[in-house]
Image 1 (cartoon, protein in one colour):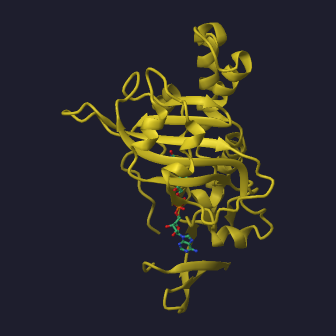
Image 2 (image 1 turned 180 degrees about the horizontal axis):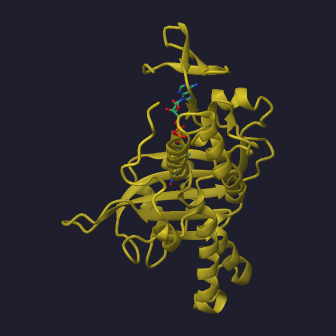
Length: 304
Ligand SMILES: Cc1cc2nc3c(=O)[nH]c(=O)nc-3n(C[C@H](O)[C@H](O)[C@H](O)COP(=O)(O)OP(=O)(O)OC[C@H]3O[C@@H](n4cnc5c(N)ncnc54)[C@H](O)[C@@H]3O)c2cc1C
């Protein structure tokens, strides 16, 4: 499809599917094909046609500010660190190796608060550039001997604000010769770094189904059956606290103040908590590494 074209809908037919496309000059086209795979994201036009009664976008009250700042990676050098509580926290992790000269990595950070969402999201666009002074006061006094949060936030060259949003799951991602994939199928809170990673898994699973069933509606059905129910459960699970539930436990047990974390939550309990999340989200390293590739090396869809 040409860049700038917009898919507005589809019509299933016995032998194929027609996608309705609008070019940016306003021209309306009907494009025939065997299958239509819709990867048109949060505001998916194809999902809206497939599920005309879907509820609106859901915002649970969390607002995230995100930026990157040069800094020293904490602990292992690849650690994912969450500081604070369920409704008020900072998450940080390195996204580059340390610079050989300065020893500093690029640290990706997310500063987050949860507010009353009764009035709905009123701040306009879903993501927008903001000034430091718009949000840094929420993290005043977050200075520790191992991490200076205000300094980290201040070190970013630009900061963007996002509401934490998703959509209620739908019972199927497939209608005849049409399938939803990625955020169009399952936009979810990106807790535990999920979202795009699931879109990649979708693509692999759909590819494997096409290798088995050809470029057919049966392949779409196999894809839907394999993923839709479990990933819909993950969407709802991510509305909870995901891996950050552990911060809630610390808060509950000691108000967040402790000298010895093992006395608050023993290591075995921490490990078990995280193992449960990783298993549910499909991030369990051992089982993931032991699993065969979703698509065997060299496998190809049969030409017909
Ligand atoms: C703040 C934030 C942090 C995140 N962090 C993570 C993370 O750490 N890890 C992770 O895995 N995921 C993360 N995600 C989620 C991730 O960004 C999304 O899951 C991912 O971008 C979805 O990819 P997609 O291709 O399905 O949809 P999108 O990236 O939304 O792409 C959809 C595309 O379709 C186009 N489009 C829309 N409508 C039409 C139409 N009608 N016709 C034709 N084209 C159309 C759009 O222009 C766009 O190019 C995060 C998301 C947010 C907001």
